[in-house]
Length: 174
Ligand SMILES: [Zn+2]
Image (cartoon, rainbow, N blue to C red; front, side, top):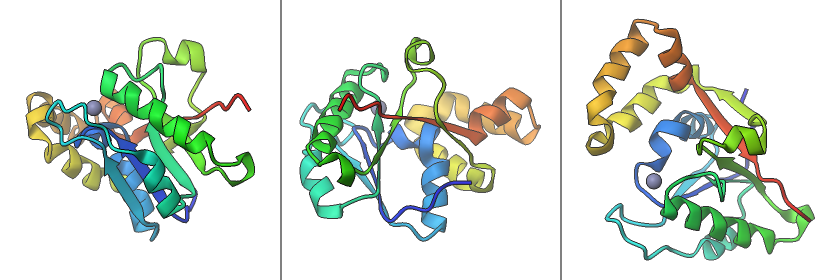
């Protein structure tokens, strides 16, 4: 069950960052009637000209923000984005802060952050998720067809990888 939100704001640096890890969750929010805004901070051209999340958060007043967990998201653009979003959300007084759900996938993330506290089973949004992944064939082409085949055959590992989306609530230090 995915909790109903007022407004979801996703802030990630690359146009394909949402596809594999969270597009089932986003499709579910959209089906629940929640507005989802995807702020993509670069054009996917190896740009380093990151946008400014603070403007966007003030404007949209989201109940949930999704970004990368700083320190656990491997790519320098992911790290820079996660840090900028945490800084922006931290400026909001604690009682008014939106929830901050972070994506983490470095090798040490479970060791250091523990198990993810938000686990979504997105079975009902798999069609949208595969559509989203298929739209980024320059990134997914080499394994996408094979993955869809295994998924349709019911391969347990593949089903788990496709249907389970995991987030860590950001651990505020104040
Ligand atoms: Zn990326």
